Image 1 (cartoon, rainbow, N blue to C red):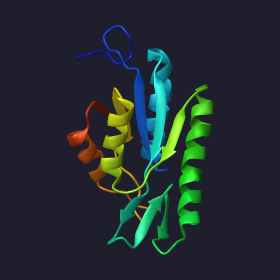
Image 2: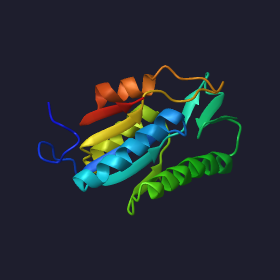
Image 3: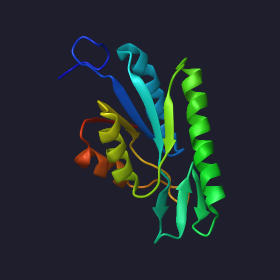
Length: 156
């Protein structure tokens, strides 16, 4: 099994980090920010709002909003998640990082993004937030793990 703490055994050029504003995704991003310089890897951060509860609520950056919320509100919440990710990356001395906000099924968008970027590693938190402020059962992480075209790292 390759040692992910050194570059000798493994080549990682592109790391895709999926974030949702949860504590687990923050830790996943921090882990990726620590690893990217060790491999001289490019870091790409993706946020995809997730529909929850019969499409009545969207989870955006740790906050739940009604689907009736305007597109502007959805865009702002997505922007807030990405801005928080940029601050975390800056705190870890990451100078260059690409970001995007996607839409639709989070697992499929993550997998499609990994394919488009030819990512070597997808890093995700083990769980995300629900509209009740609790924890989702990791269904997105589980689905990505089965569909991903590359290695996946799940961070607690």
